[in-house]
Image (cartoon, rainbow, N blue to C red; front, top):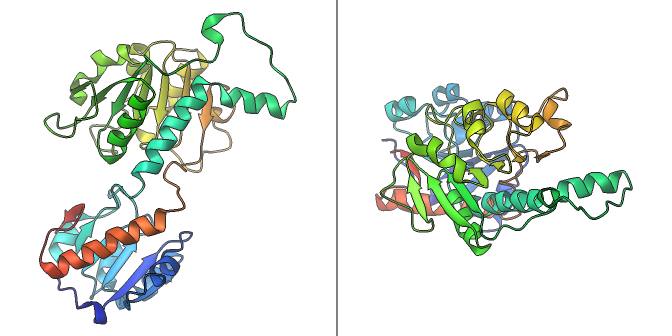
Length: 324
Protein backbone atom coordinates (compact mmCIF):
# COMPACT_ATOMS: atom_id res chain seq x y z
CA UNK A 1 0.00 0.00 0.00
CA UNK A 2 1.39 3.40 -0.96
CA UNK A 3 1.81 5.87 1.89
CA UNK A 4 -0.16 9.11 2.01
CA UNK A 5 2.01 11.97 3.32
CA UNK A 6 0.85 14.32 6.11
CA UNK A 7 -1.65 17.02 5.15
CA UNK A 8 1.05 19.70 5.04
CA UNK A 9 2.84 17.73 2.31
CA UNK A 10 -0.21 16.56 0.35
CA UNK A 11 -1.11 17.54 -3.20
CA UNK A 12 -4.63 16.87 -4.49
CA UNK A 13 -5.58 16.93 -8.16
CA UNK A 14 -9.22 17.53 -8.99
CA UNK A 15 -10.03 16.34 -12.51
CA UNK A 16 -13.34 17.50 -13.92
CA UNK A 17 -14.30 19.59 -16.90
CA UNK A 18 -17.30 21.28 -15.31
CA UNK A 19 -17.54 20.93 -11.55
CA UNK A 20 -15.78 23.65 -9.56
CA UNK A 21 -14.02 21.31 -7.20
CA UNK A 22 -10.85 23.30 -6.55
CA UNK A 23 -12.81 26.50 -5.95
CA UNK A 24 -15.05 24.84 -3.36
CA UNK A 25 -12.08 23.03 -1.76
CA UNK A 26 -10.18 26.32 -1.41
CA UNK A 27 -13.13 27.73 0.53
CA UNK A 28 -12.46 25.14 3.26
CA UNK A 29 -9.07 26.73 4.08
CA UNK A 30 -7.50 23.33 4.75
CA UNK A 31 -4.01 24.47 3.82
CA UNK A 32 -3.68 21.43 1.55
CA UNK A 33 -2.06 22.10 -1.82
CA UNK A 34 -4.40 21.37 -4.71
CA UNK A 35 -5.09 22.11 -8.37
CA UNK A 36 -7.72 21.27 -10.97
CA UNK A 37 -7.47 20.07 -14.56
CA UNK A 38 -10.31 20.20 -17.04
CA UNK A 39 -9.31 17.65 -19.67
CA UNK A 40 -7.51 14.34 -20.01
CA UNK A 41 -4.35 15.74 -21.59
CA UNK A 42 -3.81 18.11 -18.68
CA UNK A 43 -4.53 15.33 -16.20
CA UNK A 44 -1.96 13.10 -17.88
CA UNK A 45 0.60 15.92 -17.90
CA UNK A 46 0.22 16.74 -14.21
CA UNK A 47 -0.84 13.52 -12.48
CA UNK A 48 2.76 12.89 -11.42
CA UNK A 49 2.36 15.81 -8.97
CA UNK A 50 -0.61 14.28 -7.14
CA UNK A 51 -0.85 12.16 -4.02
CA UNK A 52 -4.63 12.07 -4.36
CA UNK A 53 -6.78 12.41 -7.45
CA UNK A 54 -10.49 13.17 -7.28
CA UNK A 55 -11.83 12.14 -10.65
CA UNK A 56 -14.63 10.30 -12.42
CA UNK A 57 -15.10 9.65 -16.13
CA UNK A 58 -11.88 11.45 -17.09
CA UNK A 59 -9.93 8.57 -15.58
CA UNK A 60 -8.09 6.08 -17.82
CA UNK A 61 -6.14 3.21 -16.31
CA UNK A 62 -3.03 4.03 -18.35
CA UNK A 63 -2.54 6.94 -15.95
CA UNK A 64 -1.37 4.63 -13.15
CA UNK A 65 2.02 4.29 -14.82
CA UNK A 66 2.40 8.08 -14.95
CA UNK A 67 1.51 8.61 -11.27
CA UNK A 68 4.37 7.46 -9.00
CA UNK A 69 3.11 9.43 -5.99
CA UNK A 70 -0.56 8.49 -6.32
CA UNK A 71 -1.81 6.85 -3.12
CA UNK A 72 -5.57 7.36 -3.31
CA UNK A 73 -8.37 8.10 -5.72
CA UNK A 74 -11.57 9.62 -4.44
CA UNK A 75 -14.06 9.07 -7.21
CA UNK A 76 -16.40 11.98 -7.86
CA UNK A 77 -19.17 9.59 -8.93
CA UNK A 78 -20.72 6.45 -7.48
CA UNK A 79 -19.79 4.39 -10.55
CA UNK A 80 -16.40 2.66 -10.47
CA UNK A 81 -16.49 0.43 -13.57
CA UNK A 82 -13.89 2.71 -15.24
CA UNK A 83 -11.21 1.70 -12.71
CA UNK A 84 -9.00 -1.39 -13.01
CA UNK A 85 -9.23 -2.82 -9.49
CA UNK A 86 -6.48 -5.38 -10.09
CA UNK A 87 -4.05 -2.70 -11.25
CA UNK A 88 -4.86 -0.58 -8.20
CA UNK A 89 -4.22 -3.50 -5.85
CA UNK A 90 -0.95 -4.31 -7.59
CA UNK A 91 0.34 -0.73 -7.29
CA UNK A 92 -1.08 -0.08 -3.81
CA UNK A 93 -3.45 2.72 -4.78
CA UNK A 94 -6.58 2.97 -2.62
CA UNK A 95 -9.92 3.70 -4.28
CA UNK A 96 -13.12 5.07 -2.76
CA UNK A 97 -16.32 5.62 -4.69
CA UNK A 98 -18.51 8.70 -4.45
CA UNK A 99 -21.49 6.54 -3.51
CA UNK A 100 -24.15 8.56 -1.73
CA UNK A 101 -22.92 12.05 -2.59
CA UNK A 102 -25.90 12.65 -4.86
CA UNK A 103 -28.32 10.09 -3.40
CA UNK A 104 -30.83 12.76 -2.41
CA UNK A 105 -30.66 14.43 -5.81
CA UNK A 106 -31.10 11.21 -7.80
CA UNK A 107 -33.92 9.92 -5.60
CA UNK A 108 -35.73 13.26 -5.82
CA UNK A 109 -35.26 13.23 -9.60
CA UNK A 110 -36.77 9.74 -9.78
CA UNK A 111 -39.81 10.81 -7.78
CA UNK A 112 -40.05 13.97 -9.91
CA UNK A 113 -40.13 11.89 -13.11
CA UNK A 114 -42.79 9.67 -11.54
CA UNK A 115 -44.92 12.65 -10.55
CA UNK A 116 -44.42 14.30 -13.92
CA UNK A 117 -45.75 11.22 -15.71
CA UNK A 118 -48.63 10.70 -13.30
CA UNK A 119 -49.67 14.37 -13.50
CA UNK A 120 -48.90 14.50 -17.25
CA UNK A 121 -46.53 17.46 -16.95
CA UNK A 122 -44.67 16.23 -20.02
CA UNK A 123 -47.76 16.53 -22.22
CA UNK A 124 -48.57 19.85 -20.58
CA UNK A 125 -45.21 21.22 -21.67
CA UNK A 126 -45.77 19.85 -25.18
CA UNK A 127 -49.16 21.54 -25.29
CA UNK A 128 -47.66 24.78 -24.01
CA UNK A 129 -45.17 24.78 -26.90
CA UNK A 130 -48.11 24.31 -29.31
CA UNK A 131 -50.23 26.95 -27.47
CA UNK A 132 -52.90 24.30 -27.01
CA UNK A 133 -55.26 24.43 -24.00
CA UNK A 134 -56.25 20.83 -23.43
CA UNK A 135 -59.81 20.18 -22.31
CA UNK A 136 -61.05 17.88 -19.55
CA UNK A 137 -60.82 14.14 -20.20
CA UNK A 138 -63.87 11.91 -20.02
CA UNK A 139 -62.00 8.60 -20.39
CA UNK A 140 -60.89 7.85 -16.81
CA UNK A 141 -57.70 5.84 -17.62
CA UNK A 142 -56.40 8.73 -19.76
CA UNK A 143 -56.59 11.32 -16.97
CA UNK A 144 -53.86 12.47 -14.59
CA UNK A 145 -53.49 10.17 -11.59
CA UNK A 146 -52.41 10.07 -7.94
CA UNK A 147 -49.57 8.03 -6.44
CA UNK A 148 -51.25 7.05 -3.18
CA UNK A 149 -52.13 3.37 -3.03
CA UNK A 150 -49.97 2.43 -6.00
CA UNK A 151 -46.94 0.13 -5.88
CA UNK A 152 -43.40 1.19 -6.69
CA UNK A 153 -40.89 -1.57 -7.39
CA UNK A 154 -37.33 -0.34 -6.85
CA UNK A 155 -34.48 -2.31 -8.41
CA UNK A 156 -31.39 -1.64 -6.30
CA UNK A 157 -31.73 -0.55 -2.69
CA UNK A 158 -28.51 1.29 -1.97
CA UNK A 159 -28.31 4.92 -0.86
CA UNK A 160 -30.39 6.12 -3.82
CA UNK A 161 -32.94 3.30 -3.75
CA UNK A 162 -33.38 3.58 0.01
CA UNK A 163 -33.95 7.32 -0.21
CA UNK A 164 -36.40 6.84 -3.07
CA UNK A 165 -38.28 4.25 -0.99
CA UNK A 166 -38.80 6.79 1.80
CA UNK A 167 -40.01 9.42 -0.66
CA UNK A 168 -42.43 6.98 -2.31
CA UNK A 169 -43.84 5.97 1.07
CA UNK A 170 -44.37 9.66 1.88
CA UNK A 171 -46.72 9.77 -1.12
CA UNK A 172 -48.64 6.81 0.25
CA UNK A 173 -47.15 4.24 -2.10
CA UNK A 174 -46.52 0.60 -1.31
CA UNK A 175 -42.82 -0.05 -1.92
CA UNK A 176 -41.27 -3.37 -2.89
CA UNK A 177 -37.68 -3.87 -3.92
CA UNK A 178 -35.27 -6.21 -5.66
CA UNK A 179 -31.70 -6.28 -4.40
CA UNK A 180 -28.65 -8.51 -4.46
CA UNK A 181 -28.47 -9.13 -0.70
CA UNK A 182 -31.92 -9.30 0.90
CA UNK A 183 -30.53 -9.71 4.43
CA UNK A 184 -29.57 -6.03 4.83
CA UNK A 185 -30.85 -2.56 4.04
CA UNK A 186 -34.56 -3.29 3.62
CA UNK A 187 -35.90 -1.11 6.43
CA UNK A 188 -37.94 1.25 4.27
CA UNK A 189 -39.77 -1.23 2.04
CA UNK A 190 -42.85 -3.39 2.43
CA UNK A 191 -41.26 -6.41 0.75
CA UNK A 192 -37.83 -7.31 -0.60
CA UNK A 193 -36.65 -10.10 -2.91
CA UNK A 194 -33.66 -11.06 -5.04
CA UNK A 195 -33.07 -10.03 -8.65
CA UNK A 196 -33.75 -13.62 -9.65
CA UNK A 197 -37.33 -13.20 -8.39
CA UNK A 198 -37.87 -9.88 -10.18
CA UNK A 199 -39.93 -11.32 -13.09
CA UNK A 200 -42.69 -12.65 -10.85
CA UNK A 201 -43.05 -9.29 -9.04
CA UNK A 202 -43.09 -7.03 -12.11
CA UNK A 203 -46.86 -7.51 -12.63
CA UNK A 204 -47.47 -5.97 -9.17
CA UNK A 205 -45.79 -2.67 -10.00
CA UNK A 206 -47.36 0.57 -11.12
CA UNK A 207 -43.88 2.10 -11.24
CA UNK A 208 -40.63 0.22 -11.84
CA UNK A 209 -37.72 2.42 -10.74
CA UNK A 210 -34.15 1.45 -11.59
CA UNK A 211 -31.47 2.65 -9.13
CA UNK A 212 -29.05 -0.29 -9.43
CA UNK A 213 -25.42 -0.32 -10.59
CA UNK A 214 -24.55 -1.65 -14.04
CA UNK A 215 -23.13 -5.17 -13.64
CA UNK A 216 -23.14 -8.36 -15.66
CA UNK A 217 -26.27 -9.34 -13.75
CA UNK A 218 -28.14 -6.07 -14.42
CA UNK A 219 -27.15 -5.52 -18.07
CA UNK A 220 -30.37 -5.68 -20.14
CA UNK A 221 -32.22 -6.65 -16.97
CA UNK A 222 -35.33 -4.91 -18.27
CA UNK A 223 -35.84 -6.56 -21.65
CA UNK A 224 -38.82 -7.39 -23.87
CA UNK A 225 -39.87 -10.20 -21.53
CA UNK A 226 -39.78 -7.83 -18.54
CA UNK A 227 -41.84 -5.21 -20.36
CA UNK A 228 -44.39 -7.86 -21.32
CA UNK A 229 -44.73 -8.78 -17.63
CA UNK A 230 -45.45 -5.19 -16.57
CA UNK A 231 -48.91 -3.64 -16.39
CA UNK A 232 -49.98 -1.71 -19.51
CA UNK A 233 -50.55 1.23 -17.14
CA UNK A 234 -47.06 1.00 -15.58
CA UNK A 235 -44.21 3.51 -15.79
CA UNK A 236 -40.51 2.72 -16.08
CA UNK A 237 -38.15 5.16 -14.35
CA UNK A 238 -34.45 4.77 -15.14
CA UNK A 239 -31.94 6.77 -13.10
CA UNK A 240 -29.42 3.89 -13.05
CA UNK A 241 -27.50 3.25 -16.27
CA UNK A 242 -28.82 3.09 -19.82
CA UNK A 243 -27.62 -0.46 -20.42
CA UNK A 244 -29.73 -1.83 -17.56
CA UNK A 245 -32.56 -1.55 -20.11
CA UNK A 246 -32.73 -3.15 -23.54
CA UNK A 247 -33.24 0.10 -25.44
CA UNK A 248 -34.77 -1.47 -28.54
CA UNK A 249 -37.30 -3.26 -26.32
CA UNK A 250 -38.01 0.00 -24.49
CA UNK A 251 -38.71 1.83 -27.75
CA UNK A 252 -40.99 -0.98 -28.93
CA UNK A 253 -42.83 -1.15 -25.60
CA UNK A 254 -43.48 2.59 -25.53
CA UNK A 255 -44.51 2.67 -29.18
CA UNK A 256 -47.03 -0.17 -28.91
CA UNK A 257 -48.17 0.85 -25.39
CA UNK A 258 -47.01 -2.36 -23.72
CA UNK A 259 -46.29 0.07 -20.87
CA UNK A 260 -47.83 3.49 -20.40
CA UNK A 261 -44.74 5.69 -20.20
CA UNK A 262 -41.08 5.99 -19.20
CA UNK A 263 -39.00 8.61 -17.42
CA UNK A 264 -35.47 8.22 -18.74
CA UNK A 265 -32.38 9.96 -17.39
CA UNK A 266 -29.83 7.57 -18.90
CA UNK A 267 -29.47 5.96 -22.34
CA UNK A 268 -27.20 3.43 -24.05
CA UNK A 269 -25.33 6.15 -25.91
CA UNK A 270 -24.87 9.59 -24.38
CA UNK A 271 -25.58 12.16 -25.62
CA UNK A 272 -28.66 10.45 -27.05
CA UNK A 273 -28.17 10.39 -30.85
CA UNK A 274 -30.30 12.83 -32.80
CA UNK A 275 -31.83 9.98 -34.78
CA UNK A 276 -33.03 8.02 -31.74
CA UNK A 277 -36.79 7.36 -31.76
CA UNK A 278 -36.83 8.14 -28.03
CA UNK A 279 -36.70 11.87 -28.82
CA UNK A 280 -40.10 11.85 -30.48
CA UNK A 281 -42.02 9.16 -28.59
CA UNK A 282 -44.72 11.17 -26.78
CA UNK A 283 -44.91 8.85 -23.74
CA UNK A 284 -41.17 9.15 -23.03
CA UNK A 285 -39.90 11.90 -20.74
CA UNK A 286 -36.15 12.37 -21.18
CA UNK A 287 -33.65 14.24 -19.03
CA UNK A 288 -29.97 14.36 -20.12
CA UNK A 289 -28.31 12.33 -17.33
CA UNK A 290 -28.95 15.15 -14.88
CA UNK A 291 -30.54 13.19 -12.03
CA UNK A 292 -27.36 13.53 -9.99
CA UNK A 293 -26.88 17.23 -10.61
CA UNK A 294 -27.15 19.39 -7.51
CA UNK A 295 -25.76 22.71 -6.31
CA UNK A 296 -24.31 20.76 -3.36
CA UNK A 297 -22.38 18.23 -5.46
CA UNK A 298 -18.87 19.63 -5.05
CA UNK A 299 -19.25 20.10 -1.30
CA UNK A 300 -20.71 16.62 -0.84
CA UNK A 301 -17.69 15.07 -2.62
CA UNK A 302 -15.25 17.24 -0.65
CA UNK A 303 -16.88 16.19 2.65
CA UNK A 304 -16.23 12.58 1.68
CA UNK A 305 -12.67 13.31 0.48
CA UNK A 306 -11.68 15.06 3.72
CA UNK A 307 -13.17 12.27 5.82
CA UNK A 308 -11.23 9.69 3.82
CA UNK A 309 -7.95 11.58 4.12
CA UNK A 310 -8.42 11.60 7.89
CA UNK A 311 -9.24 7.88 7.82
CA UNK A 312 -6.04 7.06 5.93
CA UNK A 313 -4.01 8.94 8.50
CA UNK A 314 -5.82 7.11 11.31
CA UNK A 315 -5.20 3.75 9.65
CA UNK A 316 -8.92 3.11 9.09
CA UNK A 317 -10.98 1.75 6.23
CA UNK A 318 -12.20 4.39 3.79
CA UNK A 319 -15.83 5.36 3.39
CA UNK A 320 -17.02 3.54 0.23
CA UNK A 321 -13.65 1.79 -0.08
CA UNK A 322 -13.44 -0.28 -3.26
CA UNK A 323 -9.72 -1.07 -3.19
CA UNK A 324 -7.63 -0.78 -0.07
